[in-house]
Amino acid sequence: MLVTLSVIAGLLFVSAFFSGSETALTAASKPVMHQLEQKGESRATTVNRLHARKERLLGAILLGNNLVNILASALATSLMIATFGEPGVAYATITMTLLILVFAEILPKTYAFKHANRVALIIAPAVNLVVMVLTPLTAAVNALVAALLKLAGIDYRAAEAFAASDEELRGAIELHDGDDSSIQHERAMLRSVLDLGEVQVGEIMVHRTNLTAIDTDLPVAEVVSGILDSPYTRMPLWREDPDNVIGVLHAKSLLRELRTRDGNLDGLDVTALAAEPWFVPEQTLLLDQLEAFRARREHFALVVDEYGSLMGVVTLEDILEEIVGDIDDEHDHTVTGVQQNADGNYTVNGTVTIRDLNREFEWGLPDEAAATIAGLVLHESRRIPEVGQSFMFHSFRFDIIRREQHKITQIRITPPPDWAERTASRDK
Image 1 (spheres, one colour):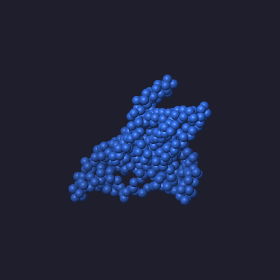
Image 2 (cartoon, one colour):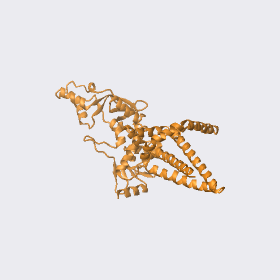
Image 3 (cartoon, rainbow, N blue to C red):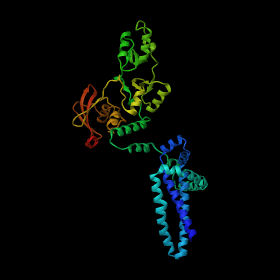
Image 4 (cartoon, helix red, strand yellow):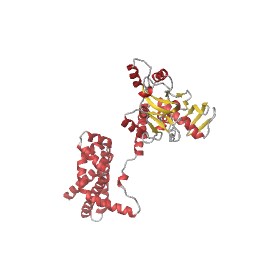
């Protein structure tokens, strides 16, 4: 009897090992393990290898756990029957259920969950050995399961079942909760990084109506003054038609040429100093454009539509601002475009982008159909509104304050009451 009890106790310990291993290895932080592997931690490498073949890992753990639990229960039943006769079956069932539940399931899994990273590193070598030994058997079981599911018309793809999705990552970002301004900024940055593969350059470019460009047919003195007086270092040059951009002049190139000439403008040809213009479609995704900027080692591109007409410009700084927010330097003009009023609403210029408002105030206004707030009002109202008209879209109120010809230039936006209450509680 003593030997049997010792074997049962040993099997319960092994069962606890399997249960804790399953929890620790599935709950261990992948970023932490990756970082430890980069630092040369061999056990973290083992954990990452087990994660990569999670179906093998879980199959081996489940197989081993069931084997030891069934064996422990069979031994306990045999012992109880020999001791108490037929009632021993009931005694064995109750006793083993309690022992397995408490000591082989709840206790090890609770501890492993609370110390997942540390436990995963400790048990990884042993679990890896178990997986290697049981792989042939688990492979056969998986093949049988796949065949049975296929007969039932269910597509069995273990790899896809465990694949991480973009939505999972976005959900993790939203779990980074809190109303502190620094946390909000972190959430906005993380969302923006994921959006780089979805947002087009046409949504963040400087529109041609706000574009500063130089007519090369002007006198040289006016051209030079225009470039040097501009807050921008790169200036598009056009001839005859603003759509006919013939080059992009860097202010440093002009200054170097002026130093060479000792300031003499006679015979200066600014077009000879300009670089070839680089045109990109407005449908280009920000992630692709960022890679193109890096590959070409350029910071400036002209955006054209499907007909080849100039739509605006996009710069490397524009893309970086999509991630970190506005970057102002000593030469930037301070134009916020948004003014918060005492009664809780906002006066917003029509050219302010929806993405900037969402990032700043976490409003969640849709930006798929329009890039600017004026464009959103036009899209939702299906008309060119008059001054004084009001609209309710997406729980927000939009009052048209100013319009120039067919262009909405200023809007008063009133957020929903629950948003105002949340903001008030955050500022306390």
